Image (tube, rainbow, N blue to C red; front, side, top):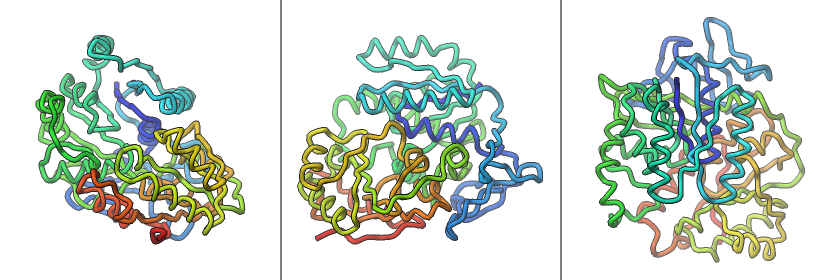
Length: 395
């Protein structure tokens, strides 16, 4: 049995994509443009959508899969049944999107188990006890957030030789970089201070990092839509081309205006709210944007202010944006600040005629308390994005 732990809607979407990717032994592995220089790439990965067409799907047993042609995707043989355990978060928006994603996963024949995993130390104990049989039987563990202390704890309780990490957004880029350099796992927007809780959980984090490092006894796969330029020796890097999303949704109806994608950089303490609100207004006026797709973590007060100041229609998506945009309707131009969608939307919307544009974050927008790594990380997210238009930060 393959056992997946997810804590966000995007993680569950990417587990679905992984489950429907071509089989690992589709064709012999060959280095390609999407391979990590330090790792090993799976052969037969699709070509880029640089020419505006659908990405070419992998060849399996001499025949192309049918996902890119609009048919049923070929489900990969992953060595057993897949159970997805949702370690439910507490915020209502994430819970709502996760429930919708769980419905889609069940429609695909995947077993989904909803676990109320928060609410104190007793909730952790109950979760570990409830998952005991599954943890012992699992042949492969699939995780979406290697920085999660909850997931790190669960990793110390399993002895499986196979481990897969699927995307949890741009944090994947930082995870690979830290694993390559042998550093402890710290989210990029944290300042790196180690409080009592961090010191208490340091042994758990260190043990999880060892589990996430490939060895002769352990296979580690990274399934990602992010650019991976360097990875530890022995990690298998598999490109996520959103085959399942493209086969199940769309193509979308395109509207004349533009859509703007929100970000939680204010909520995570990276960007000051005032310059962010001004930048959104400037982008909306310059590009004729009419809708603002809010990030699930964005605060209600901020969104009310934004709607009043800009006149944008605030949309609270009930699914990850890749599915919302593919389902449509969607603007001919999608505007975003540095975030995961500047990497994933060009793949999900390949061949539809939608242009994705990314606006840089100006250094003066950053809070004084922001991590010293913030500016460099955000610049890297923008600079490595392919098939997007670059926009300068509004003055």
